[in-house]
Image (cartoon, rainbow, N blue to C red):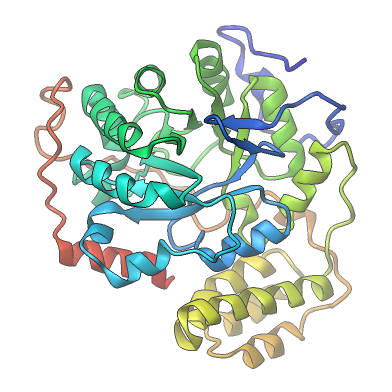
Length: 408
């Protein structure tokens, strides 16, 4: 039986400190994640939507390592509806990508309704982004700003569910814009009332960005209060963390983000422990280099040789983080223009060195800073207002934003 938290449980109970003394899953301990009437996800693990990261090449790589449901990077509804070329490219997928999952960004119920109506017939799962903390998003009244207005949140979700047919709709939120502007309780209520198949809660506020520890207590409290499945997100660095989170909070599944950057084999380890198997030994440099070459080839095939290798530069940093002598190698990796140069740089590393333990929980892609959340002028004056923000983001700005996200 999955242990559920007691209301008001102490932070120590949900500590995110390193603890590998965790047994693998017992037979029948966990159930497949049920999203809607048809979609079943086993193990109950999702690849988190990450802008500039979870494009079709990376999703395909993660699926081959065992990720059962890979959510696309955030697709801007307005740019897609207006035919932005790069947005449509990022929203594409291969014919063999099943289940196929989209994340949508919009603060306008009409845009969401039209977008969902047009894509739902070919999609197995749709997620709505109500957690993005990026200033240009919240400044326009989107992302983490939306849950501050529960009636607007409800309108957007209602529009999506009404247009989706049998395609399950989930929402992804943070604890709130800040500690003073907590929204997760209202978000959980709205998600249930408006027909969401599940709600994913990242245990940080938008003001925290990715700093500090994720608050698993709040995830457990939402599980206690929620009438729909809750997915936990935040600080799933190793396969053991997924088991710990599910046992501690009672959540129905976990969402894995930054930990898999440069570690797509994490999904193989997750599948192993959920199926009652001890994970195998960590890969060595010699094991990782072919994975990197495969990843680079997929990026070049999708984006073209030049943009594909530009994309691969950031991945080179993530894949090699923590290895001895990798700092000097990364100086070359961030300038590579072709596969041969990348392989030449990597040949300088010790091919027998296993993936370093110190890099397992290393912060990837995001810094440890905090921020002051930027909202539209007067946004907090009437939180019962369900009027969509006018949206100062123009079509040109949307296209430039999507290009920046896709370009790495």
